[in-house]
Length: 266
Image (cartoon, rainbow, N blue to C red; front, side):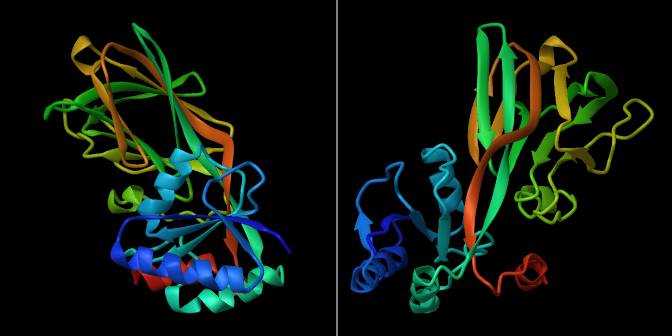
Protein backbone atom coordinates (compact mmCIF):
# COMPACT_ATOMS: atom_id res chain seq x y z
CA UNK A 1 0.00 0.00 0.00
CA UNK A 2 2.86 2.35 0.99
CA UNK A 3 0.90 5.57 1.47
CA UNK A 4 3.04 8.34 2.96
CA UNK A 5 1.45 9.87 6.05
CA UNK A 6 2.65 12.77 8.20
CA UNK A 7 1.30 13.45 11.70
CA UNK A 8 1.11 16.99 13.08
CA UNK A 9 0.12 17.23 16.75
CA UNK A 10 0.06 19.84 19.49
CA UNK A 11 1.92 19.33 22.77
CA UNK A 12 -0.95 18.41 25.07
CA UNK A 13 -0.74 15.14 26.96
CA UNK A 14 -3.92 13.86 25.34
CA UNK A 15 -2.68 14.63 21.82
CA UNK A 16 0.65 12.91 22.43
CA UNK A 17 -1.11 9.81 23.78
CA UNK A 18 -3.43 9.73 20.75
CA UNK A 19 -0.44 10.20 18.41
CA UNK A 20 1.37 7.22 19.91
CA UNK A 21 -1.70 5.00 19.58
CA UNK A 22 -2.39 6.26 16.07
CA UNK A 23 1.14 5.48 14.85
CA UNK A 24 0.87 1.88 15.98
CA UNK A 25 -2.53 1.42 14.37
CA UNK A 26 -1.40 2.99 11.07
CA UNK A 27 1.66 0.75 10.80
CA UNK A 28 -0.41 -2.31 11.71
CA UNK A 29 -2.80 -1.50 8.85
CA UNK A 30 0.05 -1.28 6.33
CA UNK A 31 0.49 2.51 6.19
CA UNK A 32 3.82 4.32 6.51
CA UNK A 33 4.30 7.27 8.87
CA UNK A 34 7.09 9.75 8.11
CA UNK A 35 8.70 12.13 10.56
CA UNK A 36 8.87 15.05 8.11
CA UNK A 37 6.42 16.52 5.65
CA UNK A 38 7.33 16.39 1.96
CA UNK A 39 5.55 17.21 -1.31
CA UNK A 40 4.77 13.54 -1.98
CA UNK A 41 3.02 13.08 1.37
CA UNK A 42 -0.44 11.66 0.65
CA UNK A 43 -2.14 12.60 3.91
CA UNK A 44 -1.55 14.92 6.87
CA UNK A 45 -3.20 13.90 10.13
CA UNK A 46 -3.66 16.86 12.46
CA UNK A 47 -4.15 16.03 16.15
CA UNK A 48 -5.47 18.90 18.25
CA UNK A 49 -8.15 21.55 17.95
CA UNK A 50 -8.96 24.16 15.34
CA UNK A 51 -6.02 26.31 16.47
CA UNK A 52 -3.63 23.43 15.79
CA UNK A 53 -4.98 23.06 12.26
CA UNK A 54 -4.59 26.78 11.62
CA UNK A 55 -0.96 26.62 12.80
CA UNK A 56 -0.38 23.66 10.48
CA UNK A 57 -1.78 25.59 7.52
CA UNK A 58 0.43 28.61 8.28
CA UNK A 59 3.58 26.56 8.97
CA UNK A 60 3.36 24.63 5.70
CA UNK A 61 1.98 27.54 3.64
CA UNK A 62 -1.37 26.06 2.64
CA UNK A 63 -0.23 22.52 1.71
CA UNK A 64 -2.04 20.84 -1.18
CA UNK A 65 -1.90 17.49 0.60
CA UNK A 66 -5.28 16.41 2.05
CA UNK A 67 -5.63 17.02 5.79
CA UNK A 68 -7.75 15.12 8.28
CA UNK A 69 -8.14 16.27 11.86
CA UNK A 70 -8.48 14.26 15.06
CA UNK A 71 -10.11 16.49 17.65
CA UNK A 72 -8.47 16.75 21.08
CA UNK A 73 -9.36 20.43 21.48
CA UNK A 74 -12.53 22.27 22.43
CA UNK A 75 -14.81 23.17 19.50
CA UNK A 76 -13.11 21.11 16.79
CA UNK A 77 -15.06 22.57 13.90
CA UNK A 78 -12.42 21.69 11.30
CA UNK A 79 -11.55 18.35 12.88
CA UNK A 80 -13.33 15.36 11.35
CA UNK A 81 -12.42 12.40 13.59
CA UNK A 82 -13.13 11.81 17.28
CA UNK A 83 -10.33 9.97 19.17
CA UNK A 84 -12.59 6.96 19.78
CA UNK A 85 -13.25 6.66 16.02
CA UNK A 86 -9.63 6.18 14.89
CA UNK A 87 -10.18 2.56 13.79
CA UNK A 88 -13.14 3.61 11.65
CA UNK A 89 -11.09 6.43 10.10
CA UNK A 90 -8.24 4.07 9.13
CA UNK A 91 -10.69 1.58 7.62
CA UNK A 92 -12.48 4.22 5.54
CA UNK A 93 -9.17 5.72 4.42
CA UNK A 94 -7.80 2.37 3.26
CA UNK A 95 -11.07 1.73 1.41
CA UNK A 96 -10.93 5.19 -0.24
CA UNK A 97 -14.34 5.98 1.25
CA UNK A 98 -13.95 9.72 1.69
CA UNK A 99 -14.36 13.02 -0.14
CA UNK A 100 -12.29 16.19 -0.28
CA UNK A 101 -13.58 19.60 0.79
CA UNK A 102 -11.52 22.48 -0.64
CA UNK A 103 -11.41 25.76 1.28
CA UNK A 104 -9.97 28.98 -0.15
CA UNK A 105 -7.94 31.37 1.96
CA UNK A 106 -8.02 35.16 2.13
CA UNK A 107 -4.99 37.26 1.21
CA UNK A 108 -4.00 40.71 2.40
CA UNK A 109 -1.47 43.03 0.75
CA UNK A 110 -0.19 45.94 2.83
CA UNK A 111 1.59 48.84 1.16
CA UNK A 112 3.68 50.95 3.53
CA UNK A 113 6.20 53.72 3.06
CA UNK A 114 8.98 51.15 3.49
CA UNK A 115 7.66 48.36 1.25
CA UNK A 116 4.92 45.84 0.52
CA UNK A 117 3.93 42.95 2.78
CA UNK A 118 1.54 40.02 2.31
CA UNK A 119 -0.37 37.68 4.60
CA UNK A 120 -2.55 34.66 3.87
CA UNK A 121 -5.18 33.24 6.21
CA UNK A 122 -7.71 30.42 6.19
CA UNK A 123 -10.22 31.96 8.61
CA UNK A 124 -9.91 35.73 8.57
CA UNK A 125 -7.88 38.92 8.24
CA UNK A 126 -8.53 41.43 11.03
CA UNK A 127 -7.49 45.09 10.75
CA UNK A 128 -7.31 47.15 13.96
CA UNK A 129 -5.71 50.27 15.34
CA UNK A 130 -2.84 49.82 17.78
CA UNK A 131 -4.16 52.16 20.47
CA UNK A 132 -7.47 52.29 22.32
CA UNK A 133 -8.84 55.06 20.11
CA UNK A 134 -11.04 54.25 17.08
CA UNK A 135 -9.61 54.19 13.56
CA UNK A 136 -10.98 55.88 10.46
CA UNK A 137 -10.59 54.04 7.17
CA UNK A 138 -11.75 54.78 3.63
CA UNK A 139 -13.30 51.58 2.28
CA UNK A 140 -13.63 50.81 -1.45
CA UNK A 141 -14.87 47.74 -3.32
CA UNK A 142 -13.39 47.24 -6.79
CA UNK A 143 -12.10 50.84 -6.78
CA UNK A 144 -15.60 52.20 -5.97
CA UNK A 145 -15.68 54.18 -2.71
CA UNK A 146 -18.20 52.77 -0.20
CA UNK A 147 -17.76 54.47 3.15
CA UNK A 148 -15.51 56.16 5.68
CA UNK A 149 -15.46 53.52 8.39
CA UNK A 150 -15.04 54.60 12.00
CA UNK A 151 -14.73 52.06 14.78
CA UNK A 152 -12.37 49.50 16.31
CA UNK A 153 -11.65 47.68 13.04
CA UNK A 154 -12.76 45.21 10.38
CA UNK A 155 -12.88 41.41 10.17
CA UNK A 156 -12.72 39.96 6.66
CA UNK A 157 -13.57 36.25 6.78
CA UNK A 158 -13.86 33.31 4.43
CA UNK A 159 -16.79 30.87 4.64
CA UNK A 160 -14.47 28.63 6.68
CA UNK A 161 -13.90 31.49 9.12
CA UNK A 162 -17.53 32.58 9.25
CA UNK A 163 -18.08 30.43 12.35
CA UNK A 164 -15.02 31.87 14.15
CA UNK A 165 -14.41 35.53 15.16
CA UNK A 166 -16.84 36.70 12.49
CA UNK A 167 -19.68 34.86 14.23
CA UNK A 168 -18.93 36.47 17.60
CA UNK A 169 -19.13 39.87 15.87
CA UNK A 170 -22.67 39.13 14.71
CA UNK A 171 -21.67 38.05 11.21
CA UNK A 172 -23.46 35.31 9.27
CA UNK A 173 -22.60 31.63 9.17
CA UNK A 174 -21.77 30.82 5.54
CA UNK A 175 -21.95 27.39 3.94
CA UNK A 176 -18.42 26.56 2.65
CA UNK A 177 -19.88 25.65 -0.74
CA UNK A 178 -20.31 29.39 -1.31
CA UNK A 179 -17.20 31.19 -2.55
CA UNK A 180 -17.26 34.66 -1.02
CA UNK A 181 -15.81 37.03 1.57
CA UNK A 182 -17.63 38.57 4.51
CA UNK A 183 -16.65 41.97 5.90
CA UNK A 184 -17.84 42.46 9.49
CA UNK A 185 -17.35 45.74 11.39
CA UNK A 186 -15.83 45.70 14.87
CA UNK A 187 -17.61 48.19 17.15
CA UNK A 188 -18.66 50.54 14.31
CA UNK A 189 -19.56 54.13 15.21
CA UNK A 190 -23.01 55.26 14.12
CA UNK A 191 -24.06 58.72 15.29
CA UNK A 192 -24.46 62.29 14.01
CA UNK A 193 -20.69 62.64 13.61
CA UNK A 194 -19.79 59.24 12.11
CA UNK A 195 -21.68 56.95 9.75
CA UNK A 196 -20.58 53.33 9.28
CA UNK A 197 -22.22 50.09 8.23
CA UNK A 198 -23.31 48.21 11.33
CA UNK A 199 -23.92 44.87 9.60
CA UNK A 200 -21.61 42.58 7.65
CA UNK A 201 -21.17 42.86 3.88
CA UNK A 202 -20.87 39.86 1.53
CA UNK A 203 -18.52 40.14 -1.44
CA UNK A 204 -18.38 37.85 -4.51
CA UNK A 205 -15.24 35.78 -4.94
CA UNK A 206 -13.61 38.08 -7.51
CA UNK A 207 -14.19 41.35 -5.65
CA UNK A 208 -11.38 43.30 -4.01
CA UNK A 209 -11.64 45.29 -0.80
CA UNK A 210 -9.35 48.32 -0.54
CA UNK A 211 -8.61 50.09 2.75
CA UNK A 212 -6.89 53.49 2.94
CA UNK A 213 -6.23 55.20 6.30
CA UNK A 214 -8.01 58.56 6.51
CA UNK A 215 -5.33 60.47 8.44
CA UNK A 216 -1.80 60.21 9.83
CA UNK A 217 -3.19 58.97 13.14
CA UNK A 218 -4.79 55.98 11.36
CA UNK A 219 -1.70 54.80 9.49
CA UNK A 220 -0.42 52.61 12.32
CA UNK A 221 -2.39 49.39 12.07
CA UNK A 222 -2.38 45.89 13.46
CA UNK A 223 -3.09 43.01 11.06
CA UNK A 224 -4.21 39.70 12.59
CA UNK A 225 -4.26 36.65 10.29
CA UNK A 226 -5.58 33.41 11.80
CA UNK A 227 -4.52 34.59 15.26
CA UNK A 228 -1.02 35.73 14.24
CA UNK A 229 -0.44 39.47 14.63
CA UNK A 230 1.81 41.92 12.84
CA UNK A 231 1.96 45.69 13.41
CA UNK A 232 2.65 48.15 10.59
CA UNK A 233 3.48 51.83 10.53
CA UNK A 234 2.93 54.33 7.73
CA UNK A 235 0.32 52.17 6.01
CA UNK A 236 -0.66 53.71 2.67
CA UNK A 237 -3.10 51.10 1.38
CA UNK A 238 -4.35 47.59 2.06
CA UNK A 239 -6.10 45.25 -0.35
CA UNK A 240 -7.93 42.10 0.75
CA UNK A 241 -9.40 39.45 -1.52
CA UNK A 242 -10.13 35.76 -1.75
CA UNK A 243 -6.97 33.77 -2.47
CA UNK A 244 -6.52 31.10 -5.11
CA UNK A 245 -4.59 29.09 -2.54
CA UNK A 246 -6.69 26.53 -0.74
CA UNK A 247 -6.46 23.60 1.62
CA UNK A 248 -8.09 20.20 1.15
CA UNK A 249 -9.88 18.67 4.12
CA UNK A 250 -10.78 14.99 4.14
CA UNK A 251 -14.46 14.34 4.86
CA UNK A 252 -16.35 11.07 5.29
CA UNK A 253 -19.83 10.03 4.20
CA UNK A 254 -21.60 11.21 7.35
CA UNK A 255 -20.21 14.79 7.12
CA UNK A 256 -22.92 17.45 6.84
CA UNK A 257 -21.95 21.09 7.36
CA UNK A 258 -25.24 22.21 8.90
CA UNK A 259 -25.38 19.16 11.16
CA UNK A 260 -21.94 20.15 12.44
CA UNK A 261 -23.09 23.74 12.94
CA UNK A 262 -26.07 22.48 14.94
CA UNK A 263 -23.95 20.19 17.11
CA UNK A 264 -21.30 22.84 17.82
CA UNK A 265 -23.42 25.96 18.33
CA UNK A 266 -26.92 24.92 19.41
